[in-house]
Structure formats: C-alpha cells, structure tokens
Length: 308
Image (cartoon, rainbow, N blue to C red):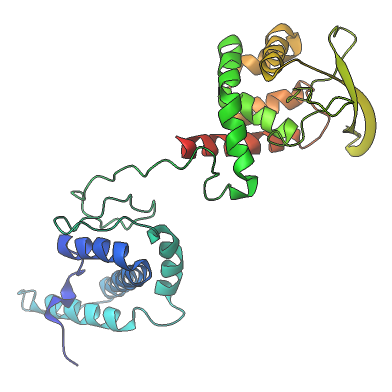
C-alpha cells in the first residue's frame, strides 16, 4: 500500500480551510461532504492513536522513526475508511449542508468567505480566520426561517405594536418583548383579537375582562375557561378600548396598580420567570398558560432579532 507523505498530519492547514470556504460559496453540498469526510478522517485518526497509546509498545532505538511511520500509516487507514456510506461523514454532511446554503459569492481578490461559521464548527478552525460579517436583516414583514409558520402577520404585528409596548415598558419596567409576547398569545398575533358586537375591533389584545370596577365600554364574547383543569366554553364580558395605545396603557396600569401582579413586575428577569409569575397571579385559568406564554415570548424575541 502506498503511503501518502502528508497523511501524518490532519491535512487541514489555513489554505485548505480557505479552499473549503471558497467551495462552500460555489457548491455548498460538495463542501459539506468534503468537510464531513475530513472530520471523520481526523476523528478516526484520534481513535486509532488512542488505541495504540493504550497498547504495549515494542522497544525502539529512541529515534522516533517507528512512531512517525505508525502515525502515517494510521492516517492513511483513516483516510481510506472515512466517507463510507452510513458512517459519521454522512451524519455530519446532513448537519452541515443547511448551514452552507446561500453563502455570499467569493471575491476573486479574496478567497475568504465572510459568512459566519456554524455554531458547531470544528475546534481545529484557525484562530486567525476572518471575522464574520453580519448577515443582512430580513424584511420587516417577513418571518425568519424557523418561524415562518407564524406568517408575515406576526412580523407586521410586532412592528406595529412595538412603540406601544415600549411605552408600557417605561411605565412598568417589564421588557417590551415580554409584553409583546403576551399580546401575541392572547390575540393570536393580532388575528384573533376580541371583537365588538358589530364586528369592529375592541383593541383588547390582552384578553382583559371587564370586572365590576371597569367603567368603560365592554363587549361579550365566547371564551374558553378551565375548571379543575378541564376546558369549557362560556360567555364573558371583555373591556373595549378606543385604540391599541389605550389597550397597552390599561395593561400597564393593571400590572402596576394591582397587588397581585406586584411580584411579577419585580421579578420579570426572564421569559420563564415572567410567564410563571403571571400564571401564579391568576392571569389565566389555562394550566399550561406559563409554558405557552414563555414559548410565545421566546418566539417574539427570535423574530425581533431577525427583523433587526
């Protein structure tokens, strides 16, 4: 068997990495395959070396020539076995390919691709690799990948309600993204907000009911309430506002003026803490409300980051 003189090294110097980056921009699938095979080869070399290190060694003349030849032989074996069907390379290729799509074209003057590397990039990437350039922000009316099921309506909802949420944040100290998440959950991202009897909007995005202390306009709609963990449909009176600004103002007034929400406002450091506090305060009867609210807030945060 012919021994490749370069087999004793990983074969992953800076020029190889630059070549992979350039290929990723031109042919992401081929680049993903090549990277996966090289990584599997390196991994197998490490496994074989560990096995040899754990085995008794014959006496040598001290020159180290035997270790050098053995390392080269192991590397050649690893390269020959890497990339076979059903191996580690196949799994790595599936993971890498989606991250290498739509990379920017490589400039002829500079063969380095400035797209950010995947979060699981191999540890052998050089420390001097070019700093990643930020990706362009998506359109403000488009939901990002992973949240496309929410539709363009979600992005529009957040964009339109953000000024009101920021004002509510100023009044309460609760992050605007938490407030937006609760409005999104209660109103179905604006698609299922409470309506007046004539079909017009009540602007009630938070599902706040009209208690005896409420002196403003109301509207009666069918809602789902939970008793003993079991859902049941029932009619209930909800507050009706003159605008979305009024709805956010009333929501902020409720959080700061009601003793039951005082601890929520004081400890709203994370989405999970805020959501759990709102459920314990009795904001909703759904036993899974905290989980749903935290998830919606996290979707809101992801969508806001994608929108820039």
